[in-house]
Length: 377
Image (cartoon, rainbow, N blue to C red; front, side, top):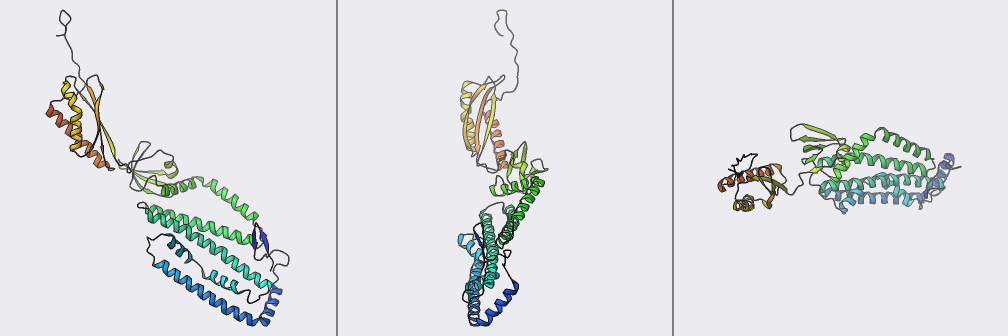
């Protein structure tokens, strides 16, 4: 059996080297081998069939265990079982023949052909296993996600296509390289073609990878309320190129994913609380006792309504008012509840001030007349 070493990988059969594979010699040696080693051939055949049936039974049992697992089970054991269940019958057959080839004392060219077939089966089977592992990890992430499963499923379909193509190309290149085909030009062509396609469709790929970033990093999800660049609304859907938003004024806004990720976003849905600030001015005629009681009035109103009082105090002298500012917090992410809470607090302040005789300030101007001695009348 002849071999070739390319980049540290031993080739099972190099078809391009001198004298690599002679069809006439192969037929002659095979016929001689069958007639002189038929006993070994029969024994090897029986062993190969037995090994194949045993491996098939083991694979069938593991596949059954995998199918019996619940869809939401995504542990390491489940991943291993589902990966093993992707083992192909061609690989099991090639493995069985490879294991008994030495017993049959096959001639060099036939042994080399068996090694080549086993090598091809192993490379493609490894690609299938690796694909199953990658998709299994993605499935686990989908199952662990509380929200955004539809977007993650879309991403899974895209990644499945990309991984399948990439692994198939890599497997083909490895096989061609190890049977003696010069793949340098092929790899260079794939690289140049990839660069050309990337430059021609860089906008599409930019939005595509931005979509994957949004789906997996989750700066926002479907139904979240966000703000950016003056926009205020909710997320309706994240696609492979664009994200569809619904403005609070009703219109739909469509933004490319790459452009959206360049913005400084404020996700209002993930707020655990909202702080409300109330600036209030009272007239200068308000007595010191009334001014001193204003913070306690505010605190009483906020706590009676079930909100969290933060602070209240005098902040300055206005042209027509003595200015206070009160701050309180509402522990809710829903804007409807926050809006109603602010409304209830405001109306309660108006009612309480009316009861206490405290007047709100508004722009006023008072003229004073001076007497002959200059004193104000």
